[in-house]
Length: 260
Image (cartoon, rainbow, N blue to C red):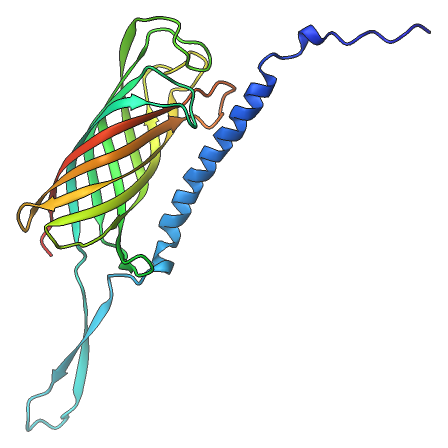
């Protein structure tokens, strides 16, 4: 028999090593999303719940037959606030994503609820956070390759919608004039067309993180300034093409504290 046919290396996939590396990065981002969800679910185990029942002693009037002191349990109200917010990106970088030359603008509502007490290890107040973004505008290149690299200087604006049901906020020096905070949120963002690449997806996972300060204007109103924030979205390799995008952004919001 003759020698075996030589292997045609030209037919080997050119993007195999690159795709393998990007798949690892996509799995890493998905792991971060699951970790954020786990933190939100396990936080009540790490901190005492604020919705505790306080025992109030009630004494029966003198001269009655019982003369017994009873205790009534009163549930403490939970502090919460609603924030009208807006975000504008001022640059993007390529760490866990390959999309470039894009800008992202959002507007919506964030709900913060002091469902958990304090994280005593770092002396921070711990809040649950949820967010809805009815206004999302993505400014992206009109044409790009499968990894999000622009192939045209022209740009287009794509509207979208975002929702982040999982999140937390750590706040220091709460109930003072200036309150530093650290926050993280995870959810979904959807567009009417495939963004960053025509081979990508309509729906992507989001992961936001950042820190800033919140200033109390009155007992009910506050002003929030996000000093540095990161907004990441990608499809976690639900399809072979996963460009993803990381943008640095500034966040500004007006908060309304509900009465206890």
